[in-house]
Image 1 (cartoon, rainbow, N blue to C red):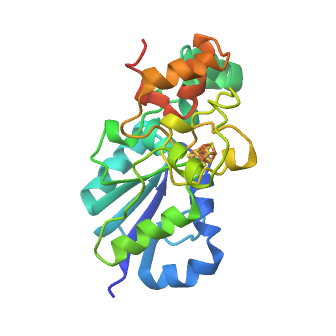
Image 2 (image 1 turned 60 degrees about the horizontal axis):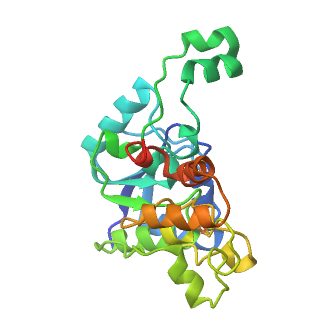
Length: 250
Ligand code: SF4
Ligand code: SF4
């Protein structure tokens, strides 16, 4: 099997997605037999040779002109480009409360904020075609390995298109939203984590982003029934949905 030439690039992010791939310790030997990483900042100091790529894995949202230039370059070089993690898919937590961006920047960086050449963080798909989405904040280890394994064999990853509620029911959990009236985002959140949080009695916070066919109006109504205000429901759903909600309920 020919090794895939892969670049793993990081933009505005916390590196948690890269770290999760490195945490697949039992599989790293097989992964390196399958993929040749020409760049991977958390794993190697190897300098990217700038050659063609089979796959670009991209973590993080785009918030600087340099990042945008690098993203466009990766898109030109790579046969496939995968957005990895909530930051890359929707803007993620980087988008939280950027209503007055200059005020927020000044609070954190003081006068230095004026010299920063940044713009509001954007998901990758606002600029380039994304071939594959590996969701999560951070993604599940198994999902990474499924996706890379499928691509290495010339196929496409079969990642779940349904909601966390499906996985919750398969695990025979009590429904936190209906039966306990807790603000759980399972009905509108993309599955793949095996309903990790509700299985421990903790509400889903939607870290895997919205399912493609999320019924947001119905989800909104159920969350209001759990006792949240409209503002709280918007904030809850928006935490990981980022810019995907920008034109919703505006
Ligand atoms: S998606 Fe989450 S874990 Fe990944 S870089 Fe963004 S904040 Fe970090
Ligand atoms: S249950 Fe929800 S918050 Fe928990 S890991 Fe899964 S998607 Fe993320």
